[in-house]
Image (cartoon, rainbow, N blue to C red; front, side, top):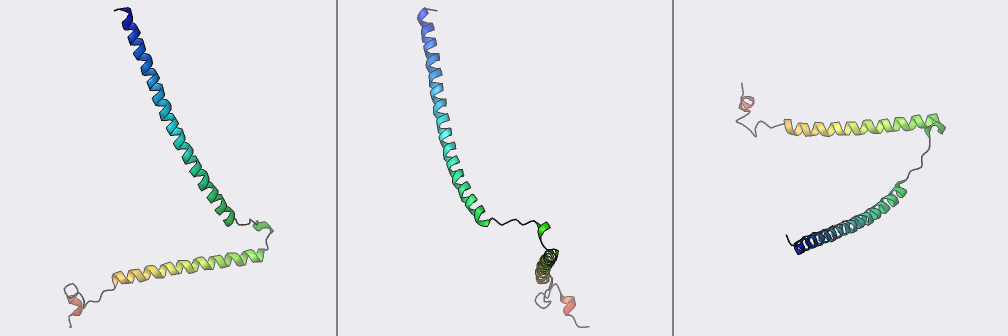
Length: 119
């Protein structure tokens, strides 16, 4: 092989390497810019959430320092609320069940003919 063929081979290899490095640098730059945009959006969302958390922040008072009678009354109130909610859910389930089960036999005579027959 002549000496200039080695020069061509190495020139092509070096140019290919430089092209590859430029391509990956551009690809990495685009990824970093996209990550920066997403980080900015995340910071905006975090700011909104922290403002909402400050608005919703409730003051913590330990129950150990509260009056036992007040705590008992609060507990009974919450238990009564839960019982009422449970009863309301049960009543709604019963109403839905009755809609599914109650059928007027006169509206479906084929299926309930034995019920409409007089004996």
